[in-house]
Structures are given as C-alpha cells and as structure tokens.
Image: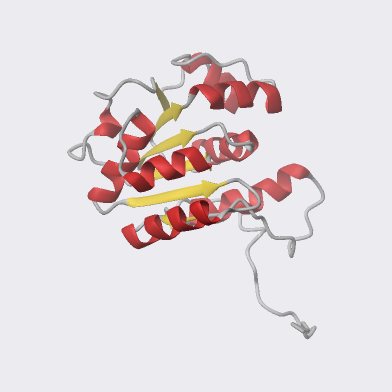
Length: 208
C-alpha cells in the first residue's frame, strides 16, 4: 500500500509522529509520500524537539524510529508540484492530513492548489480516493464548519482530533494512539486492537 501523509502547522505533531510509526510497523504500508509545510517543521521542533529540515529524509527516519537509510518514507518538498502525489495517474490508496490546520482545510475546500499539500488533496478527491483530514482547532467558527461540510460533501472524511477515553489511557501516547488507530482503520491498516470497543461486558452503561 502507498499513501500520502501531509503534516501542517496545527498543534498536534505527535499525531503525525505516531501515525507514521504505526504505518511503518503495519507490514502493509510500503511507501509513505510525506509532505510537511514550513510551519509544520517549526511546530514539530517546538512540540517534540524534532530537528527536521525540508527534504531531510534521514532526520524524518530518526524522528519516527526507522533506520537512517529506510526508503519507506519519501520526503517531498512543499513546492515540488511535479512530485508523484500531484498526479492522478500515480496510483495510491489515499491521503491523510494530520494534523490539518484550518488554513489548509480552507485551501483544499476552495480548490486552491498553491502547494503540494493542496494539490495532492485535490487529486485524491478527483480520483475518488480516500482523503482523511485530522482537523485540530478549537473552537470552530462558522467558516471552519462550512469548509468541513463542503469537503464532506466532496467525499473527504473530516476526522476531529478528539480521542476517546473508554480504553482508560494511562499515558499521553495511549491517548494519541486511540485516535491514530481509528485513523488507520480508515485505510484498513492493521494495528494493535486494545482500544477497540468490545461491547458491554455484563455492566449496563447508563447513557443518561
């Protein structure tokens, strides 16, 4: 399986980090086309201490915990409009933007292909492939909500970064992984199943 993963400057670099790590460990993802906005590079450094420069595949591999010479992740420059994800004739399973800023959301909703993230998302939609947008902002204003609805009508999956708690997470990583596993489910990518809801186990849950 080949996917495109874009990281924008919204807070939540850890979601992208854990998504990449679990994709690498899945055994079914053979290639990740990675695109990072310039703001994403800054946020990853501030939030996680990641020292990544645009196009530095070795630094990304180190960040994710892969061997320095791993070819799983192909790092594309934001301004490289000739990269593989910009063409519908390049086959892949879909694309995820994690986290997705409201600026990127608005650009995709408007069809403004001003950089590779926008263009790759537009291609994903026009080819009928799965586009998942892990939106990270609070509160949403009316413009945000209208853009989400517009993209949902266009076929995208709007995926708020709002993890659940029924698996009783004890660490931030467990909390993040709950959402990441739901994200991987969107593409049929295998993962540990500890956070999946297994139904009631004898106790009646009161929904009131």
